[in-house]
Image (tube, rainbow, N blue to C red; front, side):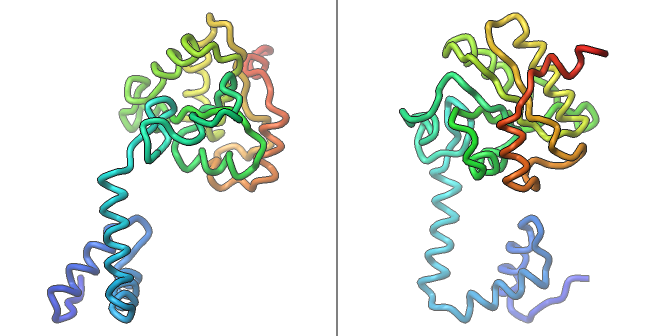
Length: 208
């Protein structure tokens, strides 16, 4: 049963904070009381930052990463290899791969993985736009950097089949990653080596 704090304002603050992922009511209460102890300008700055984030943040029209502009800084950088595209599940995975310093190409964020159980099919993901990028931008290599789960493997195979007839090399991360693990929780050294030692996707089922 939810406790009441005899203050509608505190109740509402705790309720809203507890709706955030990983934040229970006890943690929400601690955060609310912490903000009450700070200068009012700090709470106002936090609120303004959240509102601006929601209103002004958009998705890059090229790779679908989060961005302040129509095209994200990675896609617009002249120092990146525009002919190598690393395919990831979500925005967090872009940050994870970037932290290794081993990928100097661009990205393509799918926005999820194929999962029939959850009702997520290819049409719900940014796969068609990936195929169009490969065609229009003369991409030489597509690196499949999806988590080694059943959903990740299914998505990898589907993308490979869509790109199979195009003049592009399709590679995947070396299997230094534990099966069933999320890319987000892989340490930088292991992930970096997996990127460096990536293999042709077709070699994974050549002997099947």
